[in-house]
Image (cartoon, rainbow, N blue to C red; front, side):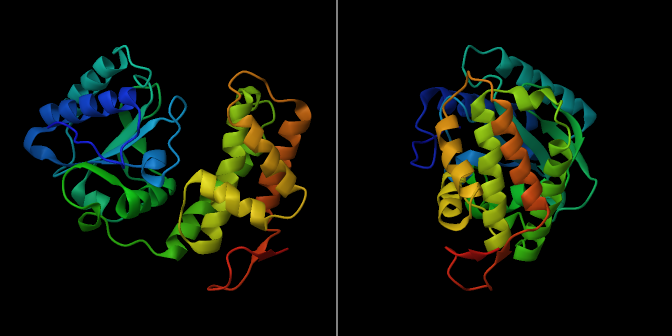
Length: 278
């Protein structure tokens, strides 16, 4: 199957080529066991950045893939990783059978591909509540039925709970100042701030949005010093070279701690989303 032109697909020939090769390869390996192929993440939420975003996908199968099929899929992804394409190592995705896809269950393992790694069985944690919601509500269908027919509705309470779980993971990382990830270029620090803004937005409204939209919301909503931090992080977004200074790292770590300490209180449900109390 050839991808047709769609305004929902990234305006990036290299990304389009890689998605076409992924779709063709998955069809060849899975055959009749394939139900659908869907794009998620930044592609689905509208904040895909050519040259820096990865290509997030979810493949639905009729039955769980066997160990033999996982080996064949690993071969496919190994071949894709050797293609001279800037997105060759930027694929992230998973293969979930349709029975398990319908509702998230704790501690289930599924074949999962992380950026720059090989496909392996991995435990899906509560962030996959959010991934399911994204596919169901905003996923781009490359092949298969409407994802709403495959994934049950996800309540706002369930979404907020999943975000709270993820924030605890971020807090744990925040308490590891010697982690080399803190020394990545400034664009990674911007990603952290943007992710915190989206977490706040999601806790407020019970639904996710693109990072740019969450940042705009945060600039209308957050008090100082966090408003200034979010504003500053916008200048970091395109910097793939500069290592953050200690003051910037410390301020981002304080922001993460502030969020986990629950020092914000949103207005009652149904009120103007542009305001919050602290």
